[in-house]
Each structure stands twice: as structure tokens, then as C-alpha cells.
Image (cartoon, rainbow, N blue to C red):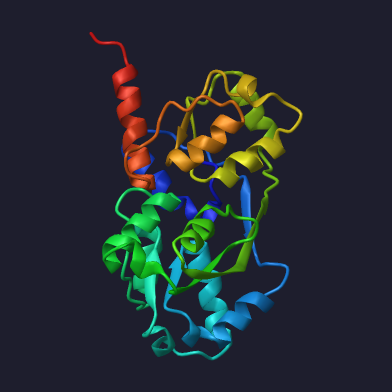
Length: 261
């Protein structure tokens, strides 16, 4: 079962199907515009004030660029900025838009890994001091990255580029019956918000009980920590936080679980 937004599920589903899996889509998140674009629009007017921009997702890229183009900006306005992209998918989206990416953390997409990648690129922690970062992201995202950058002496402006809201899947009843009947072998979560929204959709149920016969796979340790907050035992976490690596880890898990001979 894939719980990420439908528009972002194609590559992940294709990877799972290549291993012989049958995929069930149950999107628990919808991506929508923020309540106001005031913060983002103000940042776009003052882009020359920033040294770096950090994109943490494809959604951040898409919503940022829509407002960027709406303001009649040119791509050349981004030339003086260093760009950090979290994950290959985010970097690829920026590449498709002809935006140069300077830093992509290799395998650890939590705040420690991002800071380490920036420090490695810049040549040390002290170089972060007094640099100005712009972070367009989802409303109400976690504060670990901004807090860590500020502790290093950097200045960071966090602006809301989009919101994630709980979806209302039409197949909720069918999915609940399948989960309770043990018909779903594995459920995948690719963000902490997907777990939170899954819990909201099944708010009347004990999630641990609902998923007792289903293996839980999380894209990384940050997502797995949210699962732990809901007392969900995570069986599968890839070493690389990508959907391709997650699909491979799921396939390897079930191959090892099959009885021999």
C-alpha cells in the first residue's frame, strides 16, 4: 500500500511492481496552496538578500516556482544563490527547470545530514555563520533544520509555500476491511505527515491493532520516529532515503521472509 499523494506515486509504484508487487493506492495527503502567499512573495522580492535556498521536497520546488514565475522573475535571478536540494527527486525537478543544484545530501535527509552536507561543501561549521538561508516549505513542518542552522550562527527565513491536509480516500472502508483481514502485506510511509494523516483517517481505531498483520515500511529514520510515536513497529527502513531504495528494501525483506525449500 502506498500512502503518498497520487501525483507523486507513479515512480514508486513502478519500482514495486518491477519486483512483482501488487500496489494499492491509498493517498492520505493532499497538497494545497497556503492560506496566504504573503511571506513567500515578500521573500521573492528580496532574493538578493539570501546566500542559499533549501528545497526539501518537489512540492516546495513547484509552489516556489509558480510564485516565482507569477512575479515575472527570470531564472537568472537565482544565479547568485547556492541551492541545496533534499533528495534526488527534488534535485531532478530543479534540474528539469534548469536550476543549478550545489548540494544534495547523499543518504541522510534529516537535519543532521543536511547540515553535514552544507558544512562539507562550505569547508566547516564556522562558514555557516551569518549566511542567509531561505527555506520555502510546508506549513507547520518540524523546526529541527531551522533551529540547527540558527545554532550554527546562520540566519534563516522560513516561509510557507504550501500546506498538506488530510485526504478523504473513497476506498477507506475497503482498505480497512483489507487491513483487518490481513490482505495487505506491507504499508509504506514516505513522510511523518503521511503517518499523522493516516492516523487521523482511522481516528476511531487503535493503529497498532489495525496494522497488526501488516509490515510497516518507512523511507527513513525521521519518518520511522513518527511511526514510533504512534507505537507502530517499523520492519523496513532503507539505508538510502529514496522510494527506489525503499522498494528494493521491501523486496529484500519479503524475499528473506519466504521459507526455504
